[in-house]
Length: 389
Image 1: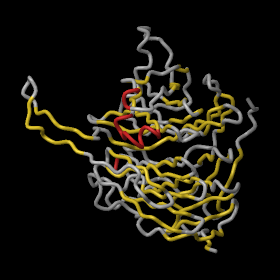
Image 2: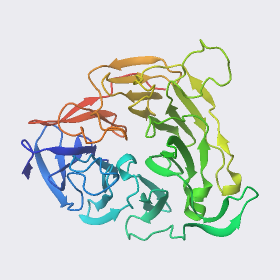
Image 3: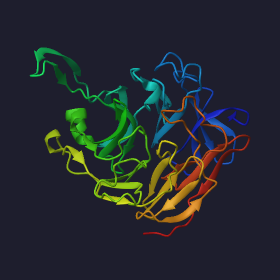
């Protein structure tokens, strides 16, 4: 066992296989620890995960602490440098490690894209390999299931205005960032951006992506600003929710200047089984009045959204104002003011403030808030009773 009472724990995530059990990352190592204890069982060393930024992005993270994130799916744990270029996939059952990397192009402002899906009895890992490319790997074998040629090149032709015409193959101008996967893993979102820059959420069918890749996506019609990695969550296999900024065009159906600010947008995913099935834009099915996410000086919302299927409520975690339990109509059911996020950086905040004591995370599978408290280990708070659907 390893005593972590005087160590800097850089990331925490709930163990899916057992309640009150957690994975933590400290001193370049993945460990497993029980709630209320600082005695941790080492799982495996992960030497490719860096402590500080080095030689990536535009140099803004040089020498600064890197935020580490853990993604857990059954016995699998993926460790990432959120704004770095390194990751590692770990099988905690046999303690094998497979190192991963993504190419560095503005990695210091784009979160490392990671998601797990299940297909035909196999666990697959969606992982970012280029700024504008995701690949799907068989978690067990490491085989890349989406090998393809990707290019953009001068065709030698010009359009009627004299501009160069480019040949494109499997190429999109899009920076992937945080991924959100549906409960049945049949769909996923990329919470990313495009130049100039502006945030753009793209929606994918997992099956379509496996054969036709990025071109199968559909773009969400709202949430255009400078705020990628905005709060988002799935509430069922075909419905997701986004939190919108104050200046998003969510009141475009009215000219009333006093119209309410509708913070939550609900979207239904259409059939995306092939690239030809995808509409040009995905419009919201509903816009809901709600203001649980405070807006910063730019009108942006920061935080996380989760869904509790047992009660049918949303859990909104904020940076500084605690957590809220909401109905799907935007009504605040419960406010938990002492359960604020760990204040991880957004793409505009360089250097990690996460880890250590103070900030809380939410484990939807176990319906539990948790944090690492220096000197005493994992502290837990159950989701308060809010009734069942």
